[in-house]
Image 1: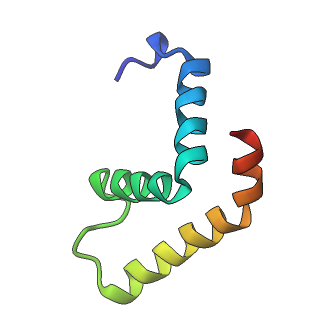
Image 2: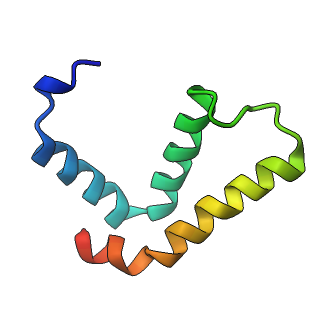
Length: 71
């Protein structure tokens, strides 16, 4: 991906709209990206995967009001 041609304000606006509409969708997208980039494996043992998902969920829940204000 050529990052030099990405308009950051457009990208920011798109992310804000996703968060405003459904923050859970944004979480799912992040999880899919992590799997696709092999940060977390689709075949991880259930306990490890659950722990990673809990960390993601806690962080999103912790900053939920910040995301809503940004949107």
